[in-house]
Image (cartoon, rainbow, N blue to C red; front, side, top):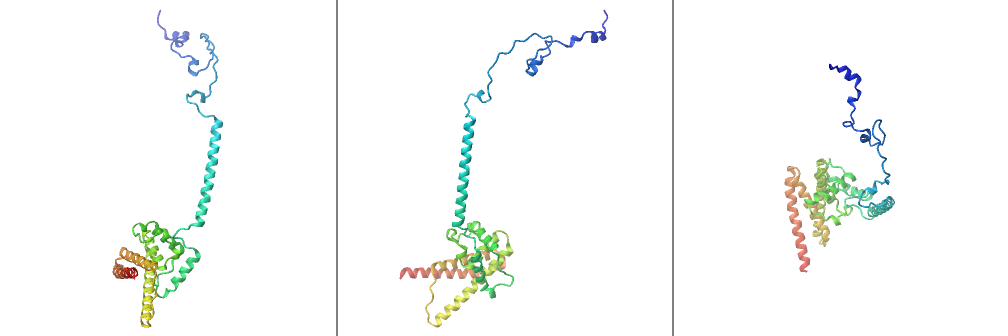
Length: 271
């Protein structure tokens, strides 16, 4: 019989349906649906419904226990937060930063600077409280590592000489690359230091002429003067090269102050 492809296409539809090679729909989708022409499948045995938590071998805590634990943790965390906040408020009231300057203390500092207005350079103005505090903060936090001449634990900006506070702020602003403000504070501190030394020399001359006893400076006063000179010398050495002669001049004065302090201490020890 001759081969006719049209007869195969039209008459034999089952050539494309062979159960041996075609998967059953229930195998594909996991559904227990009877298929027309397929052998009946036995009904699956009833199984006990298992939750997702019971499939694991290790026992997990119940949801009630987890909720109780998380609730207690939140309460403990909120309690710790309240305690920390209260402690921060207490510290804020009891302890102030050493570089902070109150409004009243800043007014007194401005009045003291104004007393030396006649010897201050014309381009130098009284710094703002923000600039002064910012310079002191940078010095105590950063510059102090390289110039450890100030005892940070006992330093209070409101209780120090104005020239010491100015030169410390100048070095702090120099560390922050604010050169213009730093130089203004330095020249103000230098001018006030020089004027105080001149007035002290005049007082000493008057006491010698009148045969009066000199007022003996306390040890903290001598120390602060030496600290101020050291910082002035360091700023002049680091800054513009035109300040180098001034640095050498103050270095000689620093040596004289130091030797005088040593002789004074030795005199007290021997007496």
